[in-house]
Length: 228
Image (tube, rainbow, N blue to C red):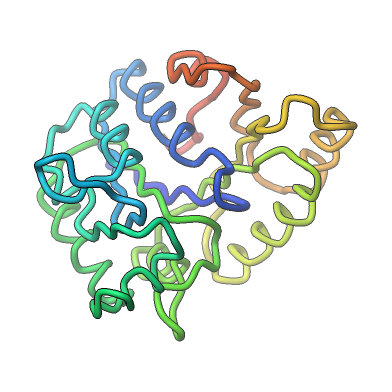
């Protein structure tokens, strides 16, 4: 079976990329695919005795059928919970697209998973350094993109700017997900209808607000990209 790879971006920090990525991995597994979730760069990592690790990467490992060492899933682990390029500067280990893509290619070349999700950090234009952004990673890999829209006030502008930037960068938007991060959002349905009309890409599902995170329930709300 042909490998399918997707880069997962969000309209903002805390849009729900990690939850949706893990739910897509579970959905693909339920469809009979072998899966792998990767988080190449993560800030806000903690050391509980096995080196710096990130909760997002650990969640992807939990929902991946392919079991890799932590360092292959999250090769660049930064301790400070701040913008990754600043956290990297503080420890004098600057980030670069070339190194990050090289680390990813090393894993992708040897792994045989059918369905692979690569989660970014924050939004589409989060810097890797003062000259490059996370967008340079999927651009170099030519990976279709899935957008997770955090449904809250301002989401229409954020979503359309993200969609337009991805298209300008020459990449395919494989789909988008509406994640209800604010349960009391005013005019929620009208906002959702506007996004459905204006984003010219497949709508992969509407994630309800959940008081307790339940990846299985999120997976139920999603459909896989058509190319999967």
